[in-house]
Length: 220
Image (cartoon, rainbow, N blue to C red):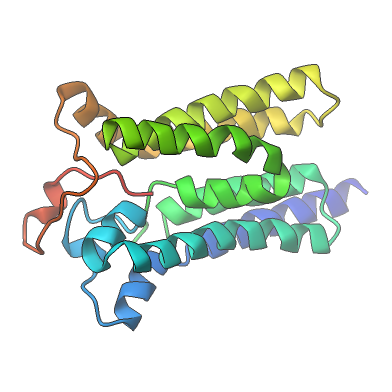
């Protein structure tokens, strides 16, 4: 039984990482003849930067696909009989794969979309906490990265509390700590710009240019 569990966790890690690494933020713009988002903004492939490249509508398509790839990774693990440990492993691996994709030189987005997809399957009720915070913070500040950071932090705290006070598997504690930890790590440059008051606000656009990769971004 122990060997089977380890095998399933290994499968979960590989499946989550490879599915998470699919760069829909590049694929979608390319399919519609738009610019590569890596040539504008921060060069990231997440929703905010894709929006700058091809507009909100196609960024939404890309973002939903990024959500789906983590959800699918967890569903695959469930289909092969993986327990909560394997499911959480798949979800966390998808976040890492999204931000450090093996298909585009270990670059990518910030991990928010796949983290949402993992939560959608593992703990969907937590989205009722995360989504309103995300929307409200962005509506008030017009800073996408601040919305992502606030929502993941509070969502993580809620997950940890939920694990402690409710009869949930202890592995959910790992998810509640791991997701905010990864996303804050992948937002470290955004955090530096927030502290210096130089972070980009929603609605600003960039034209492709050789130095555009140095610009600020709140991509997901």
